[in-house]
Amino acid sequence: MKSVLEICAGDIGSVVAAQRGGAQRVELCSALALGGLTPSQGFINAAVGVGGLRVHVLVRHREGDFVYSAAELSAMLKDIEMVAHAGADGVVIGALCADGTVDVDACRQMVLMAKSHGLSVTFHRAFDRVCRPMEALEQVIALGCDYLLTSGCAESAIKGVEMLKRLQKAACGRIEIIAAAGINSDNVAEVMRRSGCRQVHASARHNVPSSMQYERSEVRMGASDAERERLTTDIEEVIKIVSQI
Image (cartoon, rainbow, N blue to C red):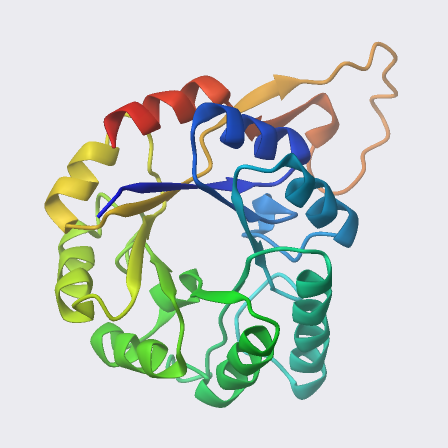
């Protein structure tokens, strides 16, 4: 099977870098510092317009845990419809119960909504918070998800490589396991070799300083000093990862 690189893209420049660097797919997110939230329709439209990539969109209503109320689930179902109308290829979803199991009912509603619009479905790294990974894998497969994004329930893919190997073997082609977290050009070949995963997910980001010349240092927009620099996908790192896989 052909190897696939998915780039986690938080801005349109990252989408362009992914496409020019040779990635096959992007996962669109906003607020990557919060673990990723649903991006705007304008961003989705722009990403689709880049062309040459499959565009999958994170559907996550808020920061924090993955235990959702009925109102939050309703909002995410509406977001899935928005993603479909914006022309994307897939959605990235996930929900858990408070006891660390997959919220099968909430996820089923999201999968059915996505499939009704012809979208593929990835179960995201909420999976890495489950209490029984092998049981959760079977539930995710039974839900009809096409992909599972996971670090192997560890801090990074390299640390979770043995669990990734177990998941890949147990999946037996019924779902595509995407190795994620801490993937870069230095370790991607090892992660793929040891886990058996043929698809990987990386942000490939680097710091870009602000172009602002005037600065009002006493004013901050939020808790961080993000106005001075930001992270965006580095085309050179994308090229390096592609060369390794």
